[in-house]
Image 1: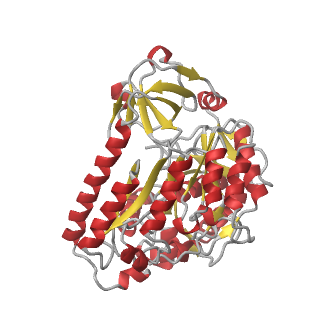
Image 2: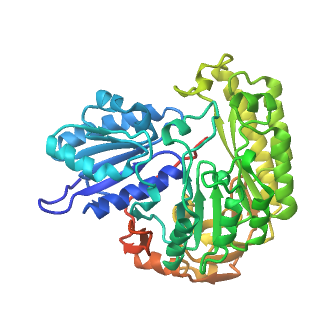
Image 3: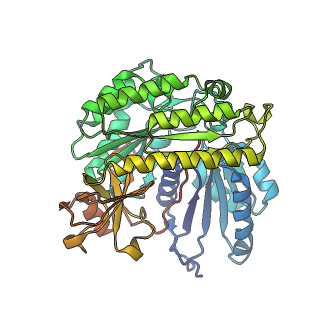
Length: 497
């Protein structure tokens, strides 16, 4: 591996773990570093700065972090001046423990002070000592920070940070704080700026998006926000994640159904189908309420694809409780589900609850849940064989595309589609729109191997071809500037909130 030549700009690499919020935070970290004069490291190079943006929700998150830090130690020893920074939820939780266990780490920063990273790196380099700075409350709303977007065609837009819920299995509220809402005008200004650069799809992000407006006393604010996105020129797709069933209101369903660019896809965490378990989880809805929302959504949008999160093996879960979860899954007919085995998270009430289940019981139920979900998702996908779909062509969605010769992307309902370019081979670019017909269905994807019905070149595809990605400015959320193409895409997982 090579390192930067003396006098050249310092290089960086960001490694991301966790949910969509972490992925978007990593875009901000990249934007901050580039504003400070750093450049993204080439894949074959040792970076001068490695930033770990961590998750505290996924199982074994700490083991994964310390394992990766251990692998970097000999690299750092051979690379004078290299710095390692750790941020995100695990940094907020573990604080000084990180430097104690890995004293070769230079900077530890929390979820509330991402904007401090360049200064902390400078200070650590000057003082030749680790800098640990963890704030207890938000220093500046993250979306006012510069952002280096990873995609020419799709972007994350935060509408709020933090969470007011008290789910007993979740540590996120204690790490990201209480909900803070952005002003609607600032959100729409950011979306307009992205659309002006050719971005076709935005996903509105929040720990609980449909409680948006709680800070300024407008219970209907989220539905209004969805409708307002329908007036933004050039924006073709709007998604949002994740809503809480407790706060789901009929006006949001109406906004989804009546706003043309809002996709008919809904990711709404169930977590359990047992009312007793939901009560123990402190989830303030019951199974009937959840299924009632789905019934209303499908009445307004029969083509809606509904996805969810489910936790198996919560403390005290009985076989009857688990069977009730399977019943709700069968009734809901999910298009897909993120499924998790419960594991104890220090600092959460559930970690101290009686009735912690043996691993083999949780594993057996998990396997039954997976089988049930896949049976349903496969059946639901088979109903789409022979129907046309509009695919937004993406990067990295099809792991086997090089071998199969297909391209991949997402339909408007969020389903993954692998398709043949046919006579458009060599012309279709990420960010373009292809209409094609589904001819095969699997539990987790659709195939379309016939001749596409059409191919539409887009400004997002032009930007990809030219190697440009939007970069949101830190100054009053003005128009994004244009940056170099990403060299090291961030990896992400699902957050089982």
